[in-house]
Image 1: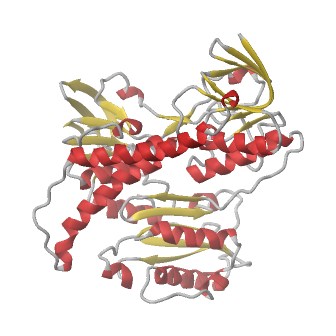
Image 2: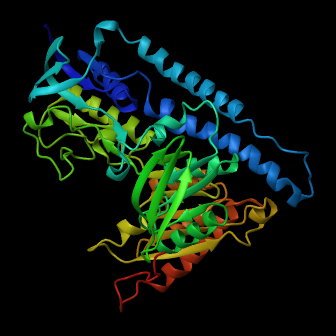
Image 3: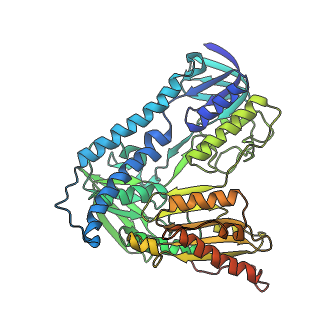
Length: 480
């Protein structure tokens, strides 16, 4: 067996792992990357990039269907499923290729192929061929799509989101299990491309939303187009030939039987920390088996081990994984001189239509016990000028501000071009602007951003009233 001694060992070559490796090497330390699967990040291979390719195709189809409402009448529309998926796979492979080029630039002696397991706090074994003594370790082992127990081993027609991007044609029908970001993005895209889609949710959640009023508007907006079935339990599933017979039970106890070409499980992802010998490290773990860590340093306890990206399940999106990895790599390189790294304002976007964005402190976080009272401003996009011009006048924005300081705290929204509004508001939040300072900024006409101004004016009026004294609850809006 080969033996290595390195300053820093990094488990995983996704976005977080590559960032950690580069940061550790920039500190002048020896480092090794360990990978058991294919090179290429989750984002490029099975995540944000191929999903956006599918969404782009669906948007083209949707605009053709919407065109007559503008007085524009295109000819007969034909969706070529094979051509759609060929472009998705081709462009996906191109994006993966960029990542592979980056990996290829790393010296071969800094890369190990195989599954890494801790055999002690500072020792790792890679398959049966290499043992490593590492002064510090960064766990960046990524995550895996969840497969629900009721659907496990049903057959090849029960799939996870990763499998969609290997299709060579569009199927006739799909049941999507889950109304998180992945489930809604893929479900709506497939529906717009002519696939019969039903989306099932155990509860009433929509993407990353926690504000009950925005959640209510989002459920109504998306249900206008999609077959959304909330409060559903999976009773059974059976593959019969090239179809899956899915039996579900609704909140009233009634059972429903449907047949689909595929059942797509989009019930989230689970961190890959259960098969790496984490129990041999002596680290304190939470109830999910994830090491307890400091979110400003990525350090696990006071140890020499750091955890980054989807493996720690803190904010499982690519920009956060990149930041996690840099912080972890920097601190692994300079350990024991561990320092807080740059944590940016949280920002999450779902590329549905209308788009969904959350940023800064969420409604749920602000309502937590012990948090001070906060004010809320809002705007509906139903009669917002530019939204109506574009026939995208659906959704709501709610913005949050701190009494006393009048500082902008965060927002949740569903609406047109939320990806752009989300960035604008996230920058204001990270700059710690007050609501008055934000209202002093220029607003052109007619633009979607005028809706932001309306919400901020509403928030400013609420802040002017001062914090309510009778109740600690700023909002009693019921959920969906």
